[in-house]
Image (cartoon, rainbow, N blue to C red; front, side, top):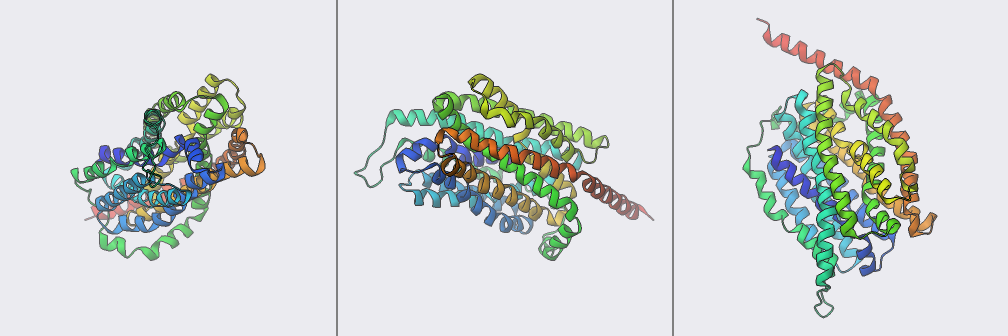
Length: 432
């Protein structure tokens, strides 16, 4: 189950991030500005993802989760393939909207199944393995995307009398999107885990969601703010760094794509190790380990994030960027594993959906176009894209650290309440 979900999640991020390798070819072919491209990279995906996330989180609580996930894989694969036929800004925008809606289905369904299958003291490791798909997917986008772009460029534009001319970037999108139709069927190779609560209970719990969030608002407000701002920093880095490298260091997609791919794969392996560390700390009494450990990582990343885009040496830049990939960028596994522990089973899909909605809105919905807007409308210079990314990091990283660190007290209190309730329930069940 975990292997299949990991593979599909990898595929989703390959489809999501492949456009970051194609920014300049798309700009040249369609005559777009950085800001227009940023709309496609960010809001086109993020807003549709956000709009679909909560209904699909509800569907994951109510219907067979494998079918929810499969429907998402089919839709995003179809939309990615359709991107390879787009001949205008509007057509590409519409295709990316459909990619976002399709990808919103997988994570709530997958996390609900993982939480029902794994014990809480092993859940962070399982979540980290699942989350490593993000890094592997982005690695594939950088590496495979760069290689496919070189291959497609050698082939050249396929012309059909002006009706449906296919530039090299079109070919890349078609090749990336098509395999999803086959891989999606793997979701039916495992049995769906038994739910912690019945579907009937889940379907009647709508009125319980908002009272639960309001009761624990001291935790959730800080938690959601902290990870939403972290998402802004992560997306600004991941989305625009390939374009920055090409412009700043004059490297080809094949060369810097291979390097970024290697860094992402290394970060994916490290994420699993870090998940194991969090589980080890949690089992040994650090009940706020999921958030506290990430705060330590975030604090260590701030000096690197503040100086990264002032580095003129390409080798040193890749080393520092690799550090951020290793330490800070992979943030979601900590938040999602923590939510799976504190969220009631009947609300888990929807609370996970809210988390994903907020981090995607703030990340792809705000950070990606913000970088493009700063570059076009504030600095008025495409060469200043590194300065635009730095603005997001200088503001966002300290805000995220303060918000998450200030949530630790409320987090510990909630874990204590959950553990006390679990013990009381166990004692009541064992009483004669």
